View 1 (spheres, rainbow, N blue to C red):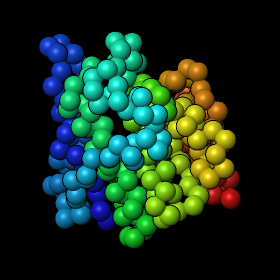
View 2 (view 1 turned 180 degrees about the vertical axis):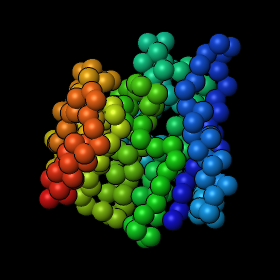
View 3 (view 1 turned 60 degrees about the horizontal axis):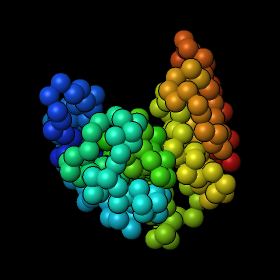
View 4 (view 1 turned 30 degrees about the vertical axis):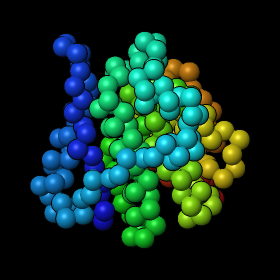
Length: 217
């Protein structure tokens, strides 16, 4: 199985600023020391034309040139740096590469994907570009796929993904998430299953199975 990871996990930040994503670097090191190391790849960065299949050009320009306002940076959760731009491009490039590899091999993974809070014209919740949306649009543009299911099992709803694909019958968005968790204003997707705090494994797995059956049908 091909596994894609980026060398751009660590971002230089102002003194005292906490960045909660060091887990990705730790995961990379764990995988590289495992039996899966031979399948690991460093992805190419997503190109402008790939990013703008899911995001508006004006937003991409603000990200690339450092033109994000203070309010936009606060919504994303960390300040602008050139390394943030590179990491965001690589994350999206890794999902594109993993999607292509999965079509050949049956399965593939990106260790740092799932940036589902990025909307077409803005980012939030530590998400700059929506890697799943970019990958889906890219494979469709290449003629590799016609229809896509994006299955999101993060505890937070995939609000940016739902908004990007609203009204598009070629992409079905399914999110199973905590009802009382961020984002507190949800964006309706094609299928949303909201779970109460304290939901147990059996209840979760039953809801997951029903949701997947509906999404794939």
